[in-house]
Each structure stands twice: as C-alpha cells, then as structure tokens.
Image 1 (tube, rainbow, N blue to C red):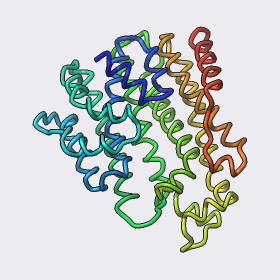
Image 2 (cartoon, rainbow, N blue to C red):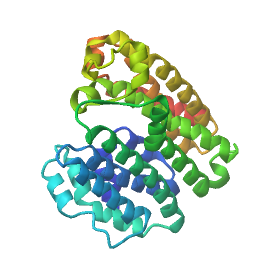
Image 3 (cartoon, rainbow, N blue to C red):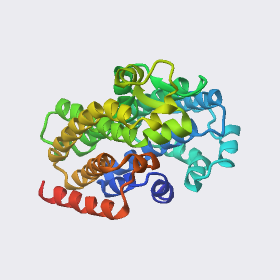
Length: 324
C-alpha cells in the first residue's frame, strides 16, 4: 500500500497530495484510498479514448463493486487494458493498472472506513455519470439547464467530499478534531467543497468549452447575459462581456463559500488536520484572484498558480496551523 500512497498518489493528485501527506495517520490512509478510487473513476469518465456508453458501464461496475460490495464484478478487464494504451499521463495509466490493488486495500479496510468510502464514492460516481450523460450523449456543445443543476454538480463532485472528510475526521480523531457541533462543520464542509469546484468551473470554462463542448454556466443565465437564442455556445469564447456578466454572481458565491471554508479551517483543533485543510482553500483564493486579474487572452489560455505561489500558500497554511 505504501507504493500506492506515495508513488501513484503523488503523481495523480497534484497539490492535494500535499494535504494528504501531512494528515494524522488515522485519517491519512482512508482519505488516500478514497481519492485513488475516485480518481480512477474520473480518469475513465473523462477520457475520449472510449465511447461514452462504455464509460458509463464502467462507472456502474465501479458502483456495484465498491458501493454494493459485489466482489464478483471485474473492473480491470478489457476496458482498462484499452485505456492504459491510450492515456498520455503515465501515473493515470499506472493507477488503472494497479486498480486491483486499490480494491484489495478497500476490501481489507475497517468497516467504518469502508462505509464512509462507499457513501462518498456513490455520490461522486453519480456526478461523473451525469456529466457523461449531459455532455457526451448529445451532439455539439451543451450548457447546464439551470442554476440548481450547477449547484447540485458542485455538491456531487466536491461538496460531498467535504462531508466525507468531516465525518471521517470526527470518527477517527474524536474531540481532537473540533469543538464545534458536527452539523455546523458538515454545512461548512459542503460549502468548502462547492467553493473549490466553482473555482475549477470558472478557471476551466474556456478549455471545457473549446476542447470538450462542456459549458457549466446555466443556459438561461447565458441568454439573459446576451447570448442570442440559437447562437453556438462556442461563440462565448469571443464574448468576454457575456462571460463576465454570467460568471460575476458565481464568483461572488464562490468567495462566500470560501469564507465558510476559512471558518471551517479555524475551527479544526488538530494542527496537522488544520494544515491539510488550510492549503486547498488558500490556493483556491489565489486561483480566483489570478482569474480576476487576468486579461481575456490570458484567461483563454488558462490561468494557473505557479509553484512559487504554492510554496507561499503552504507557508501560510503552516502559520494558520500553528497559530490559527
């Protein structure tokens, strides 16, 4: 399991690995395992190398194998073999090749950890499946139907992770986790995850639309902002005014979510957990600031937080962990 947690996890989780690596041991292993399983499913869901209906079948098999406990379900068959030959990311290929080891790790985990992993993975798999159904079973680019769907999406793929993080931390760390009531921390955790995902939606809008035909902005809001009925969604890449009008209230909501996330961080008692919890929200703030400071051509090319900024936010996280 050490190879899975170190070599593969470090290769597929980017900055999140920094958070996982500083967690207390009682929660580090189940968080790492849950991430690997979700990332394997996400790798399959996001690839263009396999037809969408086959990917949906894989996600259903993943649900049956992990969430329903169907150990007779095979996940590392022809689909994974075909994928490993087509994926560009070597660590993602390695993750799919070692998926059986991840499943064996899951099977041998304590029952309380398995129950929490099952719950969060079931929600994540639903979100991944809905993404494929909404955007890849239709021709051309698509937008979400309404604001409620976008809010649901941010919960399904990230808000539920905040709940998982909180429930497992409370279970394993007890009074060392927080003095706040669990329902208060769970609501903040949901908003924490939603805020992180909204940052991704805002940052990745040009790439998602240009390369995958995915627009997470609600279609009625796009029309209200000036997109003409019948106009191709791709025209938004030449319409900074419309995009700004649509994204502005979501940026405001995103900052409100992140403010709740900082309250969450402040109320975590365990220093290692507080350090791990602070870094993602600080990087999210930094990314949102960079997006808002970027001109349109820079935004279209993609806004990233550089390594120097990551190191700076890691130091800020350490100060927060030590001094709250």
